[in-house]
Length: 204
Image (cartoon, rainbow, N blue to C red):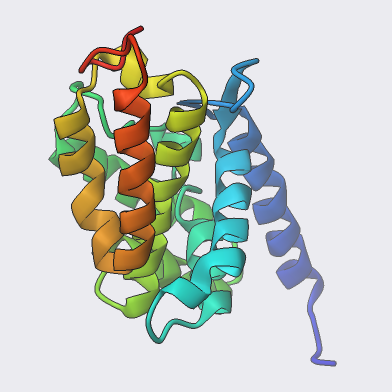
């Protein structure tokens, strides 16, 4: 056991208390039963389970490291909010600046070394260059796709998203992380849009 100072523990607890706010950040994706929208904390937990269960479908990835990336990837939304894939509001540059400021503030609550480590995990996810980050990004696309196919279109229905747009916005990212998962996901998408009475915009 290493020596821990009262200040170190206080800063760690302050960070953990701050994370409680992530439970209040509502995403556009619904729960599968459509009773309400999911929050960002639920999304991060669900993605972490995706990583534990599906990591065998990615080549040469450390599943635990993928989980770490997914647990920290949306913490910046405490300050910067959620920015859905189908959103047309706000420029990418402004969103990136807001998220960078949020990362520095929130991870800065931790003791210096631990804060740097968390910040580097977040930056690794954003850069999507390591095998683990590429797979984490793929799962971040796969989870809402799965939810939408099981919740009457979810955000696709709300935003009039077509099958072609789904393939373009989700396909490359998922396929880069796991071709076999994209093969399975694309069949779910095709099945959803092919269902009787469903139009190209996701509407019944």
